[in-house]
Image 1 (tube, one colour):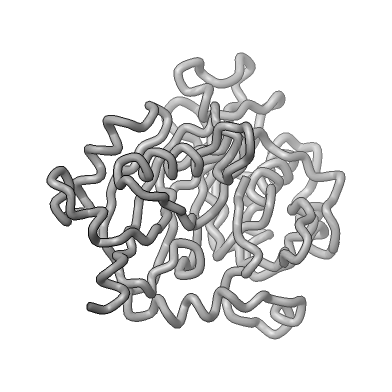
Image 2 (tube, one colour):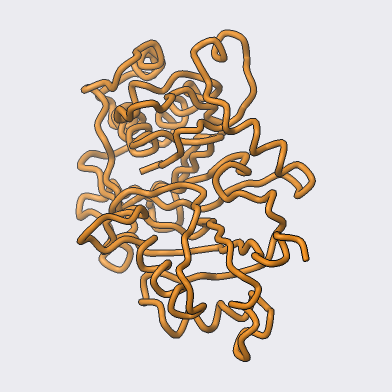
Length: 297
């Protein structure tokens, strides 16, 4: 029997309310999404389980479309309650997981699939209320507030000016060995029926604190305190800018991770393990993600 069949690779689609978690990554003495899921999976499958995630999220950040994978022996799926069907894990996990985290689907995939390195892009949603009373109580756990009225048109102008392959160092917290060159593919704003500003932010990958800093920068333009030109000038900086405010974590949700067709997974893995350098900005290099990981918080 082939090793891949002996240890099937499982792909999980995950949602969580990040309010009461200290982020995704396991940390000693802290409640995290990864630790909660791994402990529950290990109990259900009666073996240690380790997850690889598409993008680590920071404390307070939510997800509706997080993706992770793990390898488990086929014997662990052969119990009477699972009977070789990974999809049956969804109901088993729902009975055991706390209310603020859910595994929404589980399926077996070839070992070429890697939740992190096979990804083409990640999309986040940011909810921002500029109402004078702040966010509505029923949605306050996932909606940030801004103290001054915001102009969505000005925010869209600033957001559009940041699109493309650039060095986003001004918007990222420093992390040793990580690149800050990213391709920002989509960044736009609209008001929903309740007056809340909804931001869509999509990129091949995100560095530490990037999304919340992007939101803070364009919101500064939206309130009239900064100009679009100021936003564009930030792309010339090579270190984190103290001028860029970081928006609240609670407004941020990882909404979707994009993957190529299965026959392209292996090639994509190879591309995304290559760390970009500054030459890619001038030379129009590939849109591969960094080997340093991703995290939009």
